[in-house]
Length: 187
Image 1 (cartoon, rainbow, N blue to C red):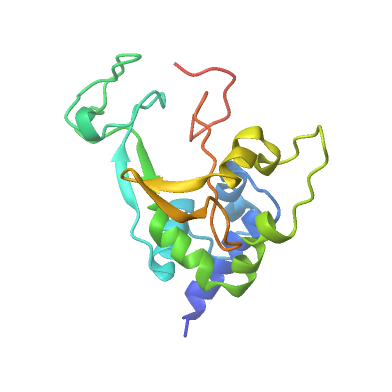
Image 2: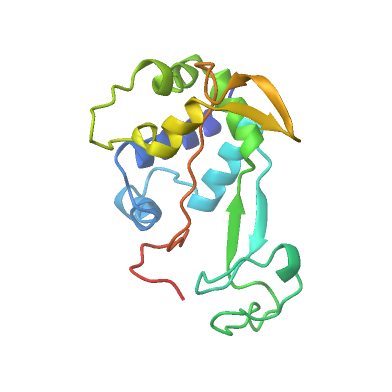
């Protein structure tokens, strides 16, 4: 059972998501409702992740959002793109990127009947219209994969890609990726 404070945090954050509030608008809520306790955005997100059982991974990143200091760049002290210092005068990283690992997120999605049902859209709800691309499932690549058998380590398996309606198809787009703000260009 959730404590009243946790329920309040969930309701406030749900309001942010339902009404597409920007982070700035959410942060301004205390000035609009001074009698209501509205936790900081970071506190709310951290508490929700904890309640959901997620363990976010926090990485330092360039203050200009050019790169993340992870893997081979974990020890870098300045951005390799714009040469901005990683650390402020206080010795702390100037900006962070919080990442929720994929596998726990997928587990949470399939654990929810409502979300799991929506995930079958690819198999049950999508109607392709010849000559139109309205979703990744209309792409030539996806359609070609659907007719191919899965091969792992040079071993051909008996099933085809996305044959099971519960299979999850991922798309990845990274061109111009800037996780913190909308930009027309990146560094």
